[in-house]
Image (cartoon, rainbow, N blue to C red; front, side, top):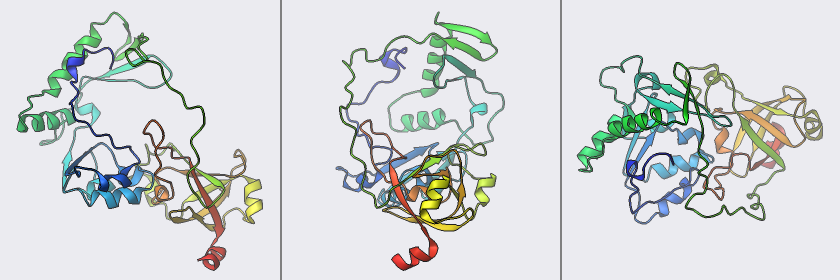
Amino acid sequence: MALFPSGFLPRPSLVRKIPVSGWYSTPSCVPPLQVAVFCGANPAKQSPGSEEFADAIQRIGFKVCVDHFMTETARLCDLVLPSAMFMEEGPDWRGSWWHNYVFRSSRVVEPPEGVLTDLEIFTGLSCKMGLGVDLEAERNAMDRAMMSDARLKFISEGLYFWDEPEDWGIGEGPFIMPVEPPAAPFCNGGIRLVTVHVKDYINGQVNGTPGEKVRTPSARLSRATMGSLGLSEGDITKIRSSRRALVVRVKVDEGLSEDICVMDQGIDGVNRLTSPIVSPGYGAPYHESLVDILPLEQEAENA
């Protein structure tokens, strides 16, 4: 974004930032939140401590979800607006991490009747509010700026190499790095819970995939950890955090270190186990949650 003139995206004078995993703090906002718009996001399922989100959103007077599917978040909203998918809009630019290649996508099919792009939806809202911001026109202006820049090299149809300018920290002073790591969150166990991407779906969105039909999810542990817990391959156990519990089937993963538990993203209820803590950069450190893993009979005794 440093390439584009500041006039493209003027910053309002009043901005409130709420961390992605900080929904527990929204009821105390002053003035209180009156309207929330969720665009292509599903925090009701993906946010750490996801039940905190469900509680917080009920306190907001009017909720809107803009998405392709009727997600868990959409079901909690008052208004759901279908939005065009990436092949139904354009031009747009997409990059990734650790390389300089970018992809310019174009509209290849028209969206269904009545379905608008995100930019059309928010441009319409801008007009209703008297702001006069045309996001579609700004996207086209940014596209022209990219296409005319000498640092962009054509590779093949839609694929370009971008010579990224060295603009880190310009005008903002030096980066301040923490000397000491943040303290670990409170917890009642000693096994670190890690949730991972899988090939069957993207970012935990399991609708219409094999992951949607999973009834007893799997949790993977090292053989040493299984032995120390008195567990065997295929045992049904309960994972318990300081917040919630989840029944799982344990499996051995020879590639894991001790005291690590790995589960797939998107499992119903897995983010109720994770702690909604906030990193110094306002991120969501998903893997800072520690759990106990107990046989069901032991869990019943401790209940």
